[in-house]
Image 1 (cartoon, one colour):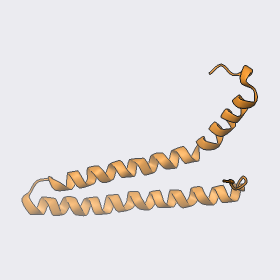
Image 2: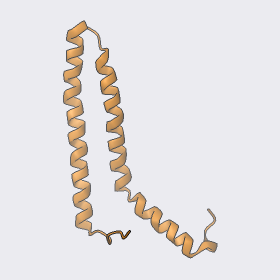
Image 3: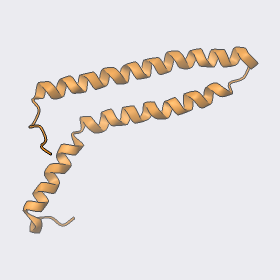
Amino acid sequence: MSHPGPKSPEDLARRRARYLTGLVWHAGSFLIIGVFFAVLDLVGDGRLTWSLWVLGAWAVALAFHGLAYLVDGSNLRERKTRQYLDKARHPDSHTD
């Protein structure tokens, strides 16, 4: 299986911008719908019950979305690939 060559800085910038836009939409919809669910829950029985479970699960998904954005932005995959290749090419120069 062949991997595509290195992407241009413009391609990487577009990808990061697209991912950030998705994250912002995810956070915005979480906020708006979360307030709506909380109001529905409070109007229903005067307490926050079911909406906390829904929003808690959604918050975990949002946290993973944010973490994926941060990890992707750090070029972790590329850095680790270079590190492992360097280690394979020069086994005596590394101590890990």
